[in-house]
Length: 371
Image 1 (cartoon, helix red, strand yellow):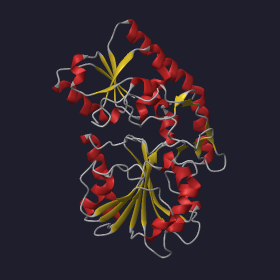
Image 2: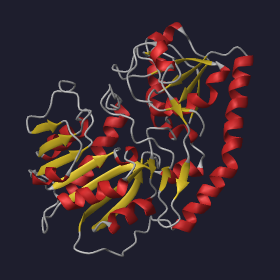
Image 3: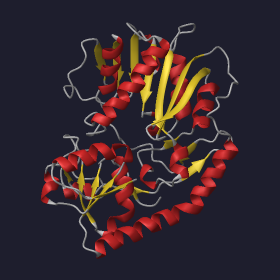
């Protein structure tokens, strides 16, 4: 991927600042030993997380229902009730608060990008504005969660090794890991899910191999959210385990998916470019619904067409800001009534019903196209 904005989730207050965001190439590379896919040209010197990083998804009822379901399942499965939970990469604290509410747990969220006062924290939850390190192993913990953090970490082996070293031997700790799944991205050529802030891409096989290598026993792994999100459950082990989960693919199988992606991606991009140009030629009003990384990944490829003038997002902390590298200002669903779009391109099809309802409530019935 050429010329991608280095930021996709920072809050930017002006058009000039947005288009001034530096751009760099993304060079996806696969490790032929373990199947790990990564951006081999990633610049590790960039600060992605301490300058207004905005990744909160909890304003969607669809997402809240999903998060409640997976949290309850993990709590019930391992009886994580009245226990101590640490979340690595807690963001604004939505998940750790929910985890403690549903399981009557005590929680600590660790994240340098945590924003005090954003949410009303659960009374049993506190936060540490730091990156996770071995010293945090001194914290009380019966479970560790880490959601949508590892894809932002370049040296993932060192990160997992740090978690393992921080754990006291013999302590029964359960881990819940969640990352985007590269298999879906490859299979449907989801170029909108490839952006600079994500330097690491995992498959069921590569993620499980990484944790086994660092002396974790993989208890389960599964896909959720229309196969977009990959979950792994694990616990520390005394030795390197060899049991392979049925969901895991081989390195050869993943390499074949990579090869197919390379063959098909230009056709995918060409088809979208053709369709967008036709919409423009017809004079249709086209908007994107869903800000953040997916919209940056999508719009970066077609910004030159100047067919999309508006991007809608329900997160109030994004509304009014400008999309990094693109310069389009986020608007609210109510502001969309002034546009009356003919076509709405939905960045995540999981939200189609929720978005369709919001549009209908505002008297709009455009064509919906889901990524």
